[in-house]
Length: 185
Image 1 (tube, rainbow, N blue to C red):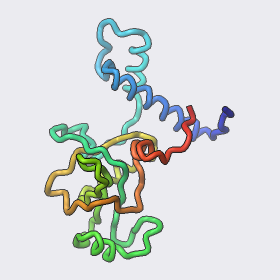
Image 2: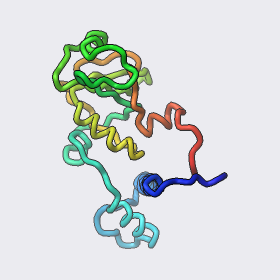
Image 3: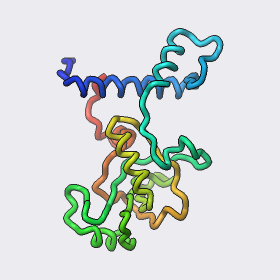
Image 4: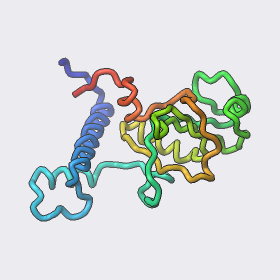
């Protein structure tokens, strides 16, 4: 396999992405610690724990770091709709899209969360959590597979069958839908 010629910034992003994968693997194995290293930790475990402590995480309301009384919802992707700032490729106005999906226009806009129901049906949740969605985008753009807390019932305007787009896919959504192409490693 030929090595890609990455610029300095892309090289650093790739290192960060791989470090995040190492952290996730350690967490999945159940030995990752953000506190003092446990007695009996191997040199590799101590090194991975130190790495995990310094990795950046972009915090946002609804990321679950402060409030953890609700479960997380796994998203395949999301979209933000705001007056005057519609996603690329959307020909309709904000008001027209709101009418099509069955919600009243709001000055703050709406977020569309694309996920699966318990029965694996594709569904779109129309939620008020616009700032949470923008926080998700900041993390997803860095390859972080971050999921938000399940929205409060008062944050959910409507749930529609199927995915409403355009969709910004989450890293997990890219993987699950097979849109990721060939991995670099």
